[in-house]
Length: 216
Image 1 (tube, helix red, strand yellow):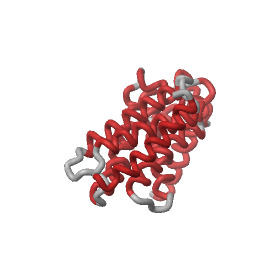
Image 2 (cartoon, helix red, strand yellow):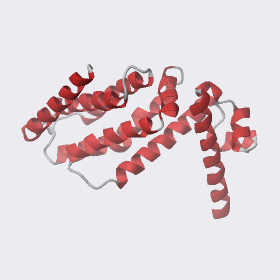
Image 3 (cartoon, helix red, strand yellow):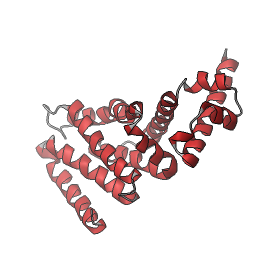
Image 4 (cartoon, one colour):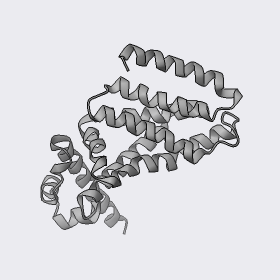
């Protein structure tokens, strides 16, 4: 059983690597099963079984893989106070796509025609964002009555807007980061306790100065 699972995992990684390379080279339109199977050196039915039966399913698998890498990077970082952890999480969510821009620009631009890709935002909020926000509320950094699910959704909405602008060439990497961080701090300030308001306001002003220098 263990050998079979290992073999399946290896086939999945080969198929994922092939999908990433095809999207990086020619965009989402390149994700045909025939091309993917040829690139991975696998049978078409094997690609179906390890990545899914359609282009949308493969895109979702690519997104899930990206989220897994993002969360692994975040979890491996040294523990930080809750508000710092929220900032680090968002910075990791920017660093991952900007480290592989050809792939992730295609993925972000595909969101409009492939709604399943939007699971990026949903899963990120569920698996990491809410955990950080709950820790901040327990520590007294956010108001006790703060609606964390809504707050996480709004933070991710700001992140996605910055990601789409970056994917469309409207923002460079620094602009992507600072636009996403600006949205994060505006959202956190809306739910901030008196304990955190000064620190959040000071950081927001620093981000605003960077955005003015960028012309954003």
